[in-house]
Structure formats: structure tokens, C-alpha cells
Image 1 (cartoon, rainbow, N blue to C red):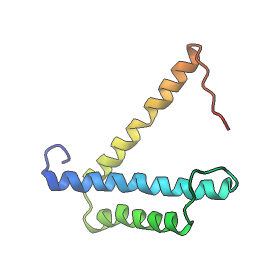
Image 2: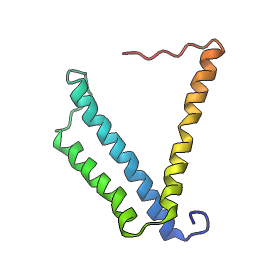
Image 3: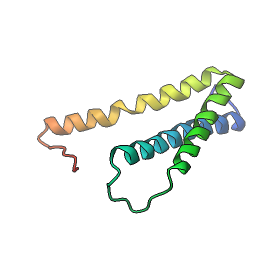
Length: 105
């Protein structure tokens, strides 16, 4: 289990979770590069770097699950997904209380 484990399992599950976020970040870079090619950027990396990091992150997420499947990997994913309703709920409560949430293009 995550709470009752040792430091090695904590490091394993933390790195599993971090590589999911790295992969999502690189996917966002690739998607933004394709959908908005003329968008002003502070710096621009060659497209092969996000592609390589995305491939590595997909490997580092799925390799532990395939090699040594544990229920704790599912706990880690569920824990990450439980976080997402909170900001949406806060934004909706702000908009109903008179605060207007606007996104600048």
C-alpha cells in the first residue's frame, strides 16, 4: 500500500505520477504547436524534443504496470483524478456568486 509501504515504493509511485504529468505537458506542447503555430512563445524548442520526452514518459508509465502490476498504481491514478473536480467546482461557485471568469485569447 502507499501509506504503509517503505521509501522505495513511495519513490516508485511518485515517479510514476510525475511521468504522467511530464507526458501531459509534452502532449500539450505538441498540440499547441500544431493548432497554434503562429502563437508568440518566449522560447521555442525543436519539435523532436517534446516527441522524444512524450515517448519516454509513455514507456515509463506503462513499463512498471506491465512488469510488476500493483493495485497501488490504480490508487495513484485515482488520487490524481480526484483532484480535478475541485478547481471546476470553485470556478462554478465563483461564477454563480457574481464573479465572472473570463479567459483571454
